[in-house]
Length: 69
Image 1 (cartoon, one colour):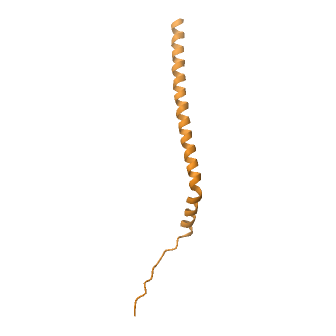
Image 2 (spheres, one colour):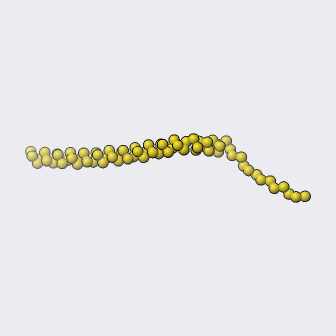
Image 3 (spheres, helix red, strand yellow):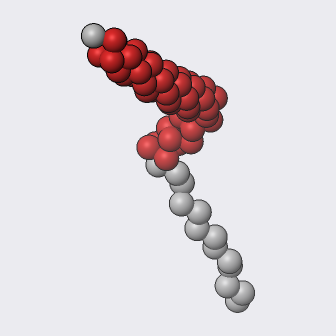
């Protein structure tokens, strides 16, 4: 008598199935969220640079005003 080959395949759990569906559905949304977050980081950096430049101008103007008095 020949032994039958039995292959055991674990069925994915409901949680695994939901995670797979979520990853497919959310992939585009995650890309958008990451792009929006990076855009915000770049904008914050630009504003910080502008603040530093404005501070330097204000200090220069204040220095000139104190020399004139």
